[in-house]
Image (cartoon, rainbow, N blue to C red; front, side, top):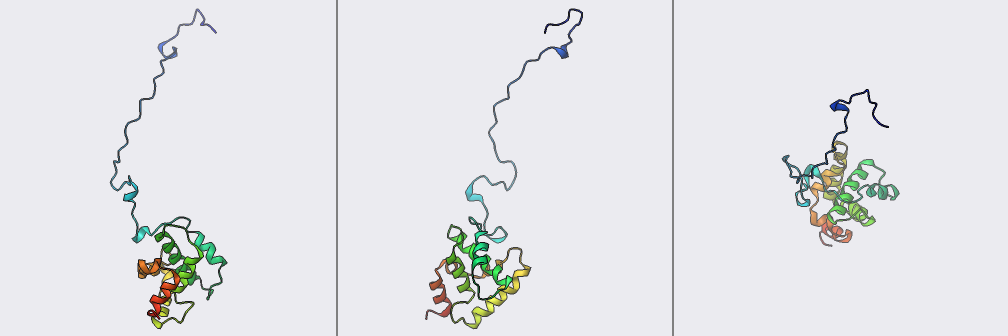
Length: 159
């Protein structure tokens, strides 16, 4: 539609030139502590040991027949299973559950030290931010990643 001859257009009503978006600038981290590479991702301590599909440990625990129906034992086993799986770079498996039970002293004649340690871990679960954290902190990484038979041998003194 054309402009009416008796109507004068002001500068605001005239079409304006559309400007293009400028090219993006190169990004640089400007905040302290900003993670820029995988090597800088923190682990351990309050960061934990994250691994893939850690919630699968809960499913394995729900389907397993445990020696005790104790929620604190489930918390200890959950922590041990997820830490073992993360240390091995995979998600939890039934072998992780077996290794956790072995570390807790089930499936063999456990010494009183192993039973006392298990009871201490179970007592700590209600007070921990992440269930099983004290258990994971107590167990040596090499022992945690060993297979259940090697764990059993280490806990019984190599018999």
